[in-house]
Image 1 (tube, rainbow, N blue to C red):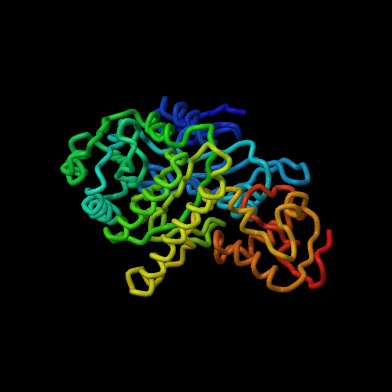
Image 2 (cartoon, rainbow, N blue to C red):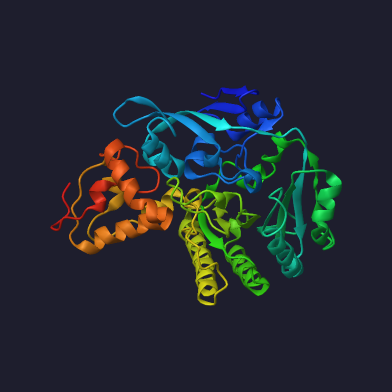
Length: 424
């Protein structure tokens, strides 16, 4: 199921459920078109889309779900339905952000945009002493331009023979090379130790990070957000946190920590209540991605991801308390696609009931006390915010036995506690 059909006149892209973004980018590129995909093109179209979808074109066109026109789905009862703004509209609302919990998506139709020109993009690397200046530039990027530029800043371990933590950056500019080099001059002036930026066809853009998100190995993901402007001294402290982790766990040298600097204005044109996705606001996402090989390091690597994202959340709370955050901020500050499955299920344990077992088999559960039910609801709201209650109602309508339990945990029978001992 990896067929892609492009309608150049209608400017739509139809992708079957098994497609990767490489399939979509290549097919659309033949017609000078593109839609908002991820930054790693061996990612499946379905997973990225149903969880929201940020990409290099988000600054100009919004999220992947903002391009979604309709989806064909197989529901828990076996029915095949089409969902769109005009057909099964309540389901269409739910799947744009929580789609993994409602069915199997077999086909997507996306809005396409003209993308005839190549783009200027590529990775760079810097010594850690350049962190303050690089952060100062990235802060300005978040507030300038019309969304045509983007920059990832983060930390990784340089390959041998260096094998030391470095500052890495991947930049993007949707325009001519001369304009791009002028825009990113403050970064180029920092004397990168590695610079492979160049003009590239758009279909190749989303493969630039494939090597850092390669197949194999053991890995986890955890997400947070950052308020801008990012304090340079805070960024330095995060770098020290990363450097200590990879020093203490050499097996995790393939790990990375990425800050996504993309102007969010276009994303925020759509309300957090317009669909289930609730992470729109004037901040950026952070991905903590430990990668290792030895099973003995599972606990240490996953704990680092939790700890560093907790550090980021505390910084966001400090910014709120100091008035450095917009007073009308309503985004949840957590991107669901960055919450790995193991983290989701580990987070829902309690003395009253082992959630993963019951969720997987869709059986009824009664909580021994109210706190367990309340705790479950609060966990759901960390991803879906004010949309959580409506999602629970729709989950009860479309998948009451929780047949689709691999996404973020939405189960009406767990949300409603009834007192008494757990019953299965």
